[in-house]
Length: 273
Image 1: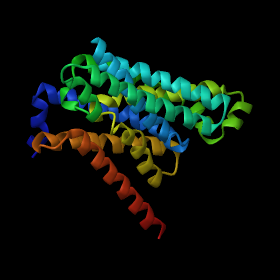
Image 2 (image 1 turned 180 degrees about the vertical axis):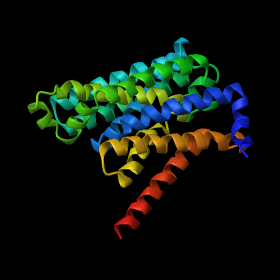
Image 3 (image 1 turned 90 degrees about the horizontal axis):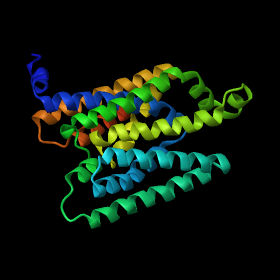
Image 4 (image 1 turned 90 degrees about the vertical axis):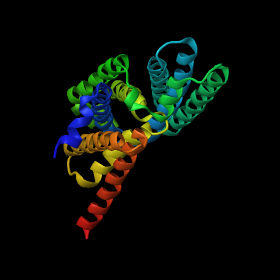
């Protein structure tokens, strides 16, 4: 009975893909809790699309696309954080939007300069978890460890700035630092997920797990743990289905995750009635 589940794991590429799925799920779902509660969803989308410029630059000069994506993702995180600190939430959204468009335009520019079809480039746009390399896994693991460790160690501080930024400042918490730190973790999580679901779908991994968990949880810790569980189920299930059915793994992961979200909405509605 377990053979259909264990057979895929006999292949090296599936073992790497499974590890990548777990790293993506835990890191993205952990930070997505704060993304949803703080209304930073546009930040996740902006980072993902701005990273396209870094991917294009990296492919053009011949280095790892994930390194280029990491550079641009971190750059946008600090630009957006600075704009939000010096102005307002609206100014932060504007900065994200401008950098969003700049990164996309730069990525398209580098595509036009490439003389041949760049497989790596397109794999990071649409996601190709089955082609994760050892270097990709090493970088993803390092970034995921940073995200998970940060959320675990600074959970109280993140909770404070999430629910009342001004009160966190008054209590002696360096809220500005933790705001920048959280934006940095969002950027790192985006890079972890790029190889798995791609630029176009990574936004779902930063919002849907926590959005689904929000409907069914009564505490922040419960929401965080349920968010991780939802992300793991959708990623692993999508990966296993794609082994037997010729569907895009990234699309399956997001479709399953979306179904979980709609299911949680329905369950919450039934519970209220």
